[in-house]
Image 1 (cartoon, rainbow, N blue to C red):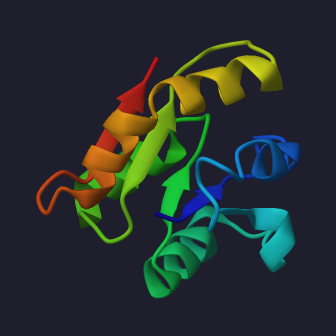
Image 2 (spheres, rainbow, N blue to C red; image 1 turned 180 degrees about the vertical axis):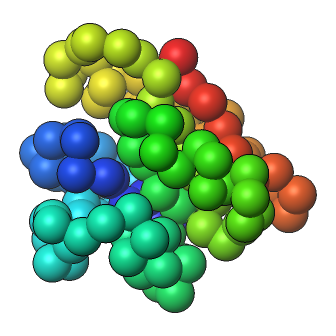
Length: 110
C-alpha cells in the first residue's frame, strides 16, 4: 500500500509512518510541492498511490472520476502532525481494507 501525502500534510509523516506504510511518500519528495491537484491526481494514478489530503479538494474529483487513485480524506480540522500520525496508525487495518477493496474509492477519517 502506497500513500501519497498531500502538500497540506507534514513531510515528516513519511518517516514516522514508514513501518506502517513503507512505500509511501510526500508530494515534496516527488517534485510536486507546487503542483495543482490534477498533477497530483495523475501522478498518484500513474504510480499506484492512494492520495491522502487534509482538505476537501480531492473529494469532488474522486466522486466525479472514481478511481484510481483512491482518496483518504483526513477530516480532522485543526490538529497537530502527531494527531494525524496517531489516526493513520490507529486506523491501519481500515486503511488496508479500503485500499484492497475493489469497489470503494473514497474514505473519510475523522
